[in-house]
Length: 212
Image 1: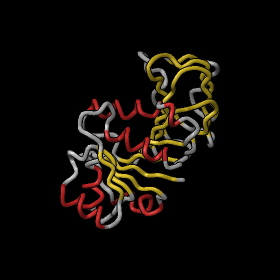
Image 2: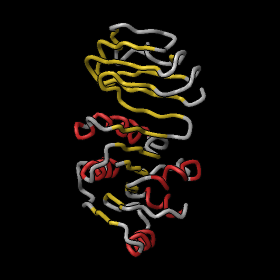
Image 3: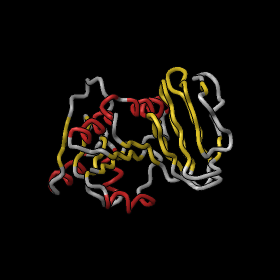
């Protein structure tokens, strides 16, 4: 199942994602992300969170349209986006695209990137998606779809990534170590698509810039 989650981002615009939103088998708003969908004339299948950002009239309109309103108490350990991702997993999503996860507060953005490492997401294709870029974790041998000339950065998370080997990138890596506090993996380039990266140990974030 393909799920699309819309986070509460001050920079998110629905227009570039109309087709993706329409194709989603499960469309979930993370709290105030529901305001963004409502303003775009889109009703999600569910709204998840403590609903402190969701406008009351939007909640009422979604409920009347049959959307599930999944409310959590405000004193909770998880962010609304984390809860929305877990909701999608619980309903069988094996592909999850998250919109609006970046932009706005840095702490929220960094935490959203870290959510990609949740053990519940293992074995699923999960992306943080924007108009001109995407981010996802490399797990084992991971393809990097894209066109020649597009930029790809490989960023270790939380510590070193070891045994990093690439194929189809200009600056090749062979059983290399990328360190969390160094920038060696930034701004590589696809030269022979489809590219691929393999990581033996650690967490490696792939950031792919479309057309750049």
